Length: 176
Image (tube, rainbow, N blue to C red; front, side, top):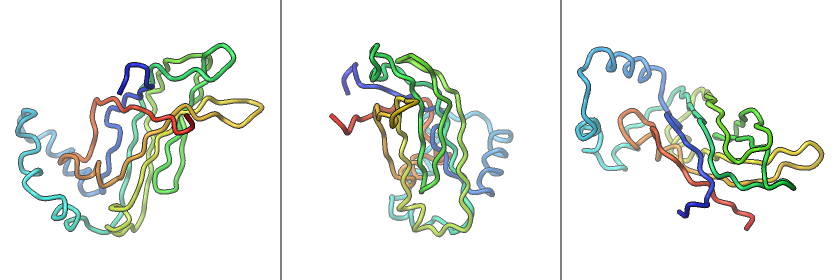
């Protein structure tokens, strides 16, 4: 990744949990002493990816996407600035942040929730999440600045809390 690629900060960016697990996560946070980063995933990482995928259960899931900010977004307007907006598509559901006017660095701090009922484990294993940054236009179609795509199972099996936390992602401009 070069310094000129646009980036989006994602804190608690993608969190895939079922309702029971969310309650367990809250209990864990209040009852257990603070873990160090080294041992927080030790039990979770003992299983292979195949074993983890086989342990998924059918049910209701919530995907939480927290879009915090974007930096060095490519200017697409006549003044080399953009009116950036972030669109998130998660398993065919779409949501967007608000539009920021005339900037290449924007702060949204938006939390988007995607609720899924009665999913089978295969749907989670095959599910995708696409984060796209656009230059919003009033009169013409929005212009793509860049996007990032990943599998939901990648996030679900990332660690025991099923999240990417305080990590920048680089957007790719597929039109160049």
